[in-house]
Image 1 (cartoon, rainbow, N blue to C red):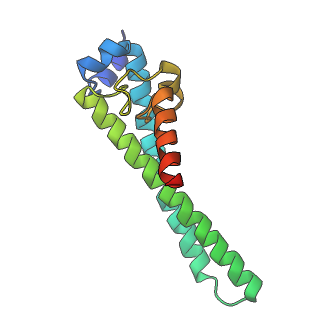
Image 2 (cartoon, helix red, strand yellow):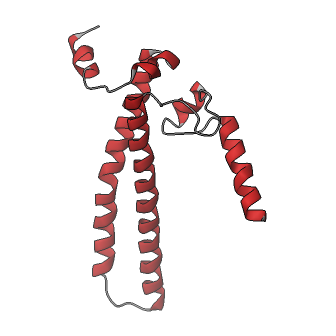
Image 3 (spheres, helix red, strand yellow):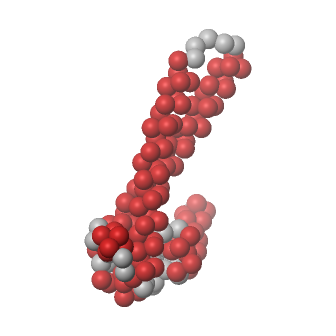
Length: 143
């Protein structure tokens, strides 16, 4: 292992319980994915805020222009809300890595599938857990 890898790994806060379920290289890879996505999302609200302020300066125009501005504002606001929710999930995933709960399904208490973690490293549900949660939500909607 090179010094760069050593110095990079010092900052990882991965609980030993996580590396019992995932190999250390995979845990580190997932940790880096979470950190990179966190950084990406942390910078996005500023771009959206800038775009919203630009839209707010545009005054006047006919009704169609005003509707377009409102639609753009709604689009940016919706994206910012989705980004903030995802950022919250990422922060929770990093916390689970630190406390040893990362990779455990909240619904079934079983280990989450590796392919699922690799595609959604912030997930809290295994495939089975997601199916159970979805059926519970459908049941609540029917009631």
